[in-house]
Image (cartoon, rainbow, N blue to C red; front, side, top):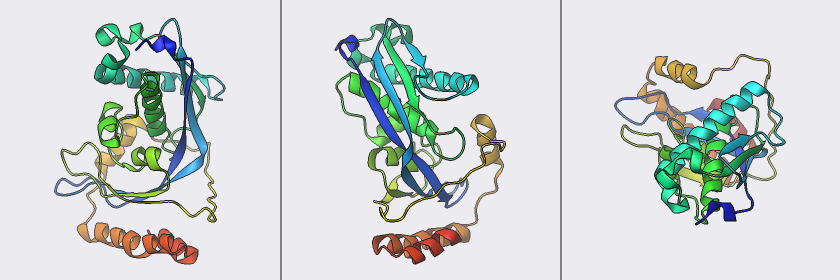
Amino acid sequence: MDVTEVQHVTVSAPSRIPCGLFSTSNDDGPSFGGMGVMLRSPRTEISITPSSQFEVSRGSAIVNDQVFAELRSTITTIVDRWLQRYGSIVDIRDRQLDDFPVRVTVNSIPDRHYGFGSGTQIALSVAAALFGCAGQPLAAPEEIAPVVERGRRSAIGTYGFFTGGLLIDQGKVPGQSLAPLDFQIAFPEEWPIFIAYERTRRVVSGLKEKAAFERLEPTPDHEREHSISIVRDRIVPAITSRDYDRFAAGLYEF
């Protein structure tokens, strides 16, 4: 397949908001796990078009130079890793990034590092667009997540890219690349979601975020089990029965 035959591939992905984790890191059992909801907006949208050489552009996305530099580095890494794994299906000689004649354009993206899961959505959007260029379906979550280095803690955003809705993951045990999906359901259309956050606050991301998680003490088993029981016995039944008051009370406690 000649990638220059593809005129335009655009992928638009939802955002993710986390509702909470079941636990911190745990050497003896599942780590993390928890619940989250996918949102129709704000959205991550990227396009891939033929180019004379590999490049990344910001398109209509309103981001400053620092954020764009971060995005360009992230996207370059994703494309390079994708080529190393799947380069044979696009006939790229030696799977070298410089030989890949495409332009990746970031059309829109949520504010970074505020809990919208934009890192996961940009990674999976780029991967999905690359598969689209090759005329191939996106690989399964369990296969593509380690390729684009996502799902190291929560798996909600990865599965949510494919399914949307409210999702629960079980947490991951040592050796797993992606936590198993435990439950997924469409979020009730009649329950609007209002989001407020402070754009001027200091954010923690990347290596600092990883170090912060590593400093956390393990969650006691009884606390993890209590969190799981709130979700299993109160939140999920409230969602399935469309009982908003019960859902809100359970979510607040969780």
